[in-house]
Length: 59
Length: 274
Image (spheres, helix red, strand yellow):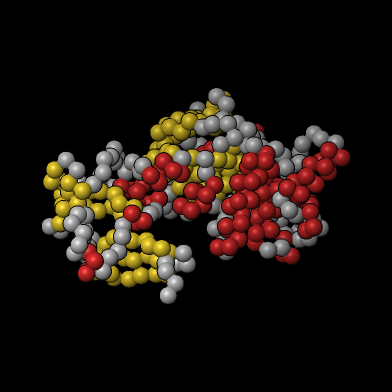
């Protein structure tokens, strides 16, 4: 079967922070990212490629 | 304004189905976007609505009157529809005013009535200052506004738009989306807008008809197709979604790569593999 997950409902966490979350955490590798002004898109490999859209933070 | 209905509209080329629209029940003064990838049958559907193509099956109806069916087709010029194309299709030897006035050439109106109607449309499309210019002296956005004014001047019941913004740069496309929607709201005609651009459809449409391989996948408001896609195809095509292959473990639990996920309710009623 398939499940549908909105890109903005996904959260990207560093490995150190992910360990403290018990549920709904998948390990993955960031394959690419793009800065798009008010948000940043990440392509993450979790065995399948997923797109994660997060708010861009100006550093 | 008019109510446009499509009922089992079918077109085949060399026996291969190009379009097989089950049903679209229109509403008065509605802005409908036909959205889908290249080759999905959007333009073929639009051309059957315009009367430029004859259907092999089904009907196009406006306010209950059959305009197209395999047995009879009302010619395009008697449908009170206007059409706008990606390529603008405006004449290089005519000024903006002449081009817009051409839409009224065959209308039985007094010259003064034609003049005031042209002036009103030039004003509505913000072209009054360019009225005496030729197309070569206009930007792409202005040329598309000329095409819009010419299409609207005869007061069509239905405006058909075939990817009208595809030749414009991103900024101008953004401006023109609002312009096209503003004119629709001001003049209250029914619009059918073909696009492969999800943002265009989400920005302008009252309802979006998502097409795939000649068939209608889903019809709904922008919110409905985004929040409740009825197939994996729609979820992928409308954007903003990941469709992940998982193994069902228990009621609301699935497994992916050896990790379990808790998921919400809901399912795709359509074929899951698409």
